[in-house]
Amino acid sequence: MTQKGERLLEVLSEFSLDDALLLEEYDRQYRALKRLHEAVGDNELFLKLVITNALLSYQLPTKGEKYWENFASFFSEKPDLERFEEFLRLYNNRFLGGKLKRLQKVLKAIKNLDRKRLTEFCRNPKALLEYLSETLNQSKEAKTLVFAVKMFVYACRIAISKRIVAPFDIDIPLDVRLKKISNDLNFWRNLAKGLGIPPLHLDALVWVTMGATEDFLKDLPSDLRKKVENLKAVLKELTP
Image (cartoon, rainbow, N blue to C red; front, side, top):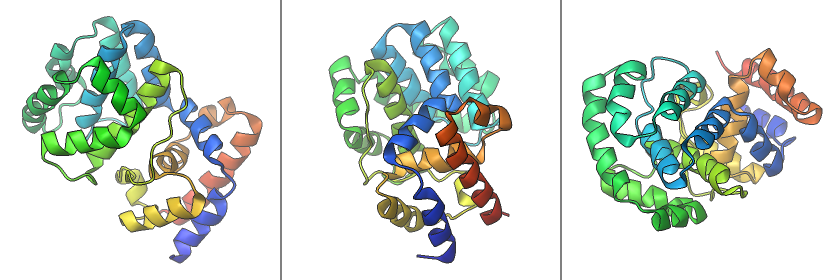
């Protein structure tokens, strides 16, 4: 493991899997999904909206937290998969032409899913990754696919009120924040293995902490806040 990896392993060892799952519940993206779920009132539609949006979450014009808050507000008013083109034009319009083409492929894949299949995916998130990889013809390591599984796991926890832990063999979604630390998937795989925390939940620890504001930190339980503040300081040292 690299020196950077060893330093991260040291500070992240303060966190348990339970800590990671708790921090996820404070993630602004998770909280946005909770608001959306309350407004939609239909688990099947809610899960489909979340997967669809996650699969289009790239080259965003705003920070990820704000983007998902916009998503929740927009679809809370009128939850309908057919409104995605309107949403993209308003809130995700960078490289719009390519996203509109991808939207059609995504909708075709998502509309085929029924409540039973979605429930199966909640029990086995790896099966969702395999389905998306096959239907969208993308690698299982693709950032948008693993990110979609991450957000789906969030959504399942909200929809069925049960703890869901992602398996170790789903990679971390490498976005611009994480790439400041390392763009090598093996770096993150080894770190997750060393910690005993699956990559999708390790993602929350690092990604959420890197974007944490003072107001966000104040909301955390005191024990968790101290750990996050310590991690944030180390991450600041390790990133340019």
